[in-house]
Length: 589
Picture 1 (cartoon, helix red, strand yellow):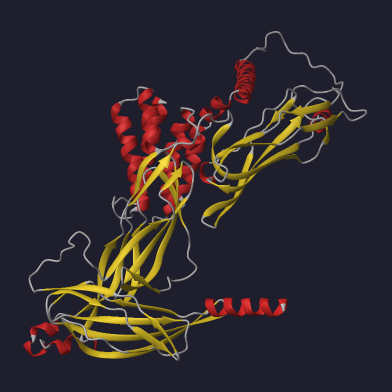
Picture 2 (tube, helix red, strand yellow):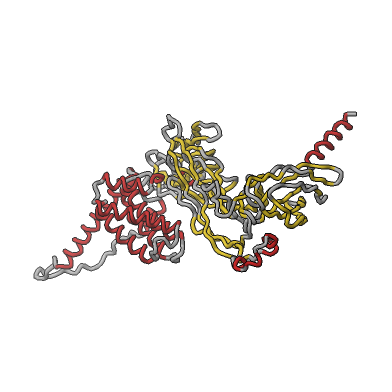
């Protein structure tokens, strides 16, 4: 009895799930007298062709129909079917028209459609809804949410709605989004058209682009419209020149001539309300938002004095990796640390960035014994829990051993192997017959003094280099400032090897100038936007001419990157202007 009940429940569930879906729609909401429109009845999930009894409807007359069509689709191994009846009517009198709900017969079962309304206007009348007139083609920007925190992702689908044929599309540029950093989500193939009813009107729809946005500041922000160029099907106007075709019968789509035309379309702007992250914030919070894990490990827990060991710090999870800053280590006394290597592996999954970022420090202990590193901490704002979470690495210990029989510890920074090589260079002075020089000969000639003068310069340079290195090791800001020009030149050199139409070229030139200013003024890496950079320059009392030129240059690069052709400047001109601006900033920073 129990098995029978379960079987009956499963059967009822299957029948309910397999129930056909019946809908009706028209291809327009407003039209003029003598114009034609189509009324479509669509049935999904049934192999039976629908049958109806057409009601009498005032103010319109049937031109043709029904036209029957069947469509079968296979998606992920599952088949779906769709049956369609299409009727063409002509408008006879002005006024509002309501097509009532009709009974649709599928075999022995019957279903009812929804009602559909439209309005017939006289020739010369202006449509009532002028602000949002009915369109055959339009693009709508659909955000996943309209209210979020700083650093919280929002995906925007740019969706095409069309009642005519669309043969090709071209996106001129991705929307400008001040206050966001964004990344387009790649599509594996051309957009696939799907039938959809909007306010009683049936459209073919397709998602043209999907972009992921991360807000970087709070406030009411706006994402500008997406601009795209579409090649669409339009009605030919040649037929209207001949009066013999003014009869409503020839308004039937069968007799309508069409042609292809290129048109520009824009989506609606998207308004996003961005909230500040709550207070108070953890002391080591740097702006990470999402869900993350922290891992800090040594390559090995035991080494000899002067042997190198790597300390790896990895943050993994999902969130705003673009502005994520990895925690830094504080090295104990007796340990030399060298420039770290950074790597990342991040991709977009489930409409968010997922992956990991890693920094590897090369450490060289100079004294033996146990070395205890401070616990590495990383704080982020958890979007699910709506609170701050702090991860820590736990204790990190390194045992350093002094090799038996080794040479006395060299505090100058040389390893035992380097000292051994130096010893091999020492040679005993070979005794030889002494050759005496006459007292009349000049011993302290120009060559003697030149050699000694060069030696003094060399020793002074080495001492200065050693003093500068010690300053850099203890001062991260000074280290960044001293390397600013070299880093900028490396970016500029990379840009010169790129092609003129490369988006990366504009990005590198922007990083060249923005990074130089940020390094010189010790600005945090996640705050290097144009407005804040210009503000930093003004606080340093830089001349207004240089500040204005810098702002104009950075904004022009951004516009040329996201709106190719708007600035009309070649790559060579950008590179030349970058070099000139870099030299000006070098003199004043």
